[in-house]
Structure formats: structure tokens, C-alpha cells
Length: 130
Image (cartoon, rainbow, N blue to C red; front, side, top):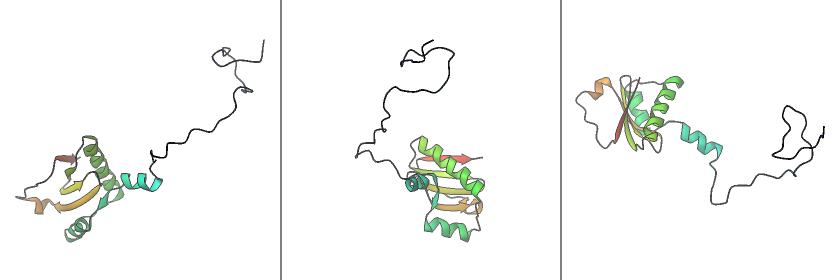
């Protein structure tokens, strides 16, 4: 049997090292105007940030989130982003947060006691995290 083969004419049932053929070429680089995001930019997009105001409110109200809870909240923000939300009310257990979805930033937060008789304005969506 002939050891040479051509693309599109592979012998069935044979395996082995591919030799000869076409020269190896480098992959095309992206056009200069199509900038790929850096690792830092990708990491920042996946993280959830807290504004200074939100951090202050969380401290005042004794609200603390662990990595697992932050992951659940970040996934809720991802869901809101997938639906095109811009400013979302995220309800996590007994905590309400207003989140700027494009910036992935918690703008303010309040606990259950502070939510009583509170009206949320300037939001376009709400996400309830279970």
C-alpha cells in the first residue's frame, strides 16, 4: 500500500505520523482596529466591584459576603447583562443591591430592615438570587 496520502483522500483505518504536506504558517493576527481584551480587562469584566458608597453601606449595616456569595451575585449580574439590563435591583437573601450592570458595580446596598417601605427608582430590571 502507498504510504503517501493527500488531503481529502485519507486512507480509512490507518493512523500514524503525518509527514510532508503544506508548510506550517503562522496564524493570522487580528486587524489592528479589532483589539482583543487583555487578561486584566477580562478579569475586571468577570469581577463584581463595589462603589465607595456601597462599601460604606455594607459596613454600616454589618453585611459581609464570602467568595461563594459574591460568585452567586456575579452570576445574577451576568443574567441581567444577558437580557440587556443597565441598572438592576439584585435581591440576595435579605440584601437589596442596585447594580450598574455594564460596569459590574454595586452602587448601593441595604438590608431587610432598611428596605421596608422603600421605593426603588431608576432601575430597568430586578434579579432575585436563590
